[in-house]
Image (cartoon, rainbow, N blue to C red; front, side):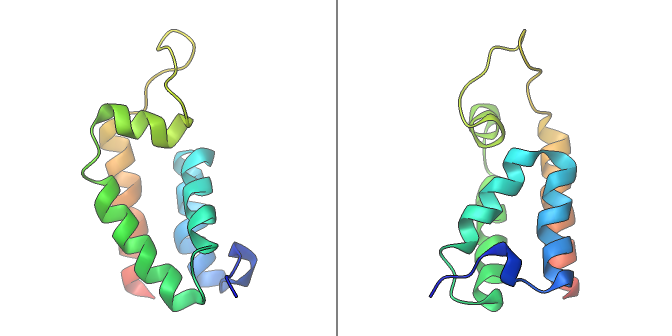
Length: 99
């Protein structure tokens, strides 16, 4: 049976979900959706690291799709900053490595 983010330990929840939320709520949703593909916290941590490694290769358009879900006009909403996106992802990886 898949887990939900409510099933994560407080430490793992803070390491991933809270840190992702600091960058953008939609990034948090990506990890929330990932939890439904995991049978336990260990698998969630492993898959989170793999997802982050993949996200670190994203170009600007892929980052925008991840953060906004759909392409937005720059005039309506500023484009996500690639450096800040990478910084947030690296912080999550660092947090996970400490667990």
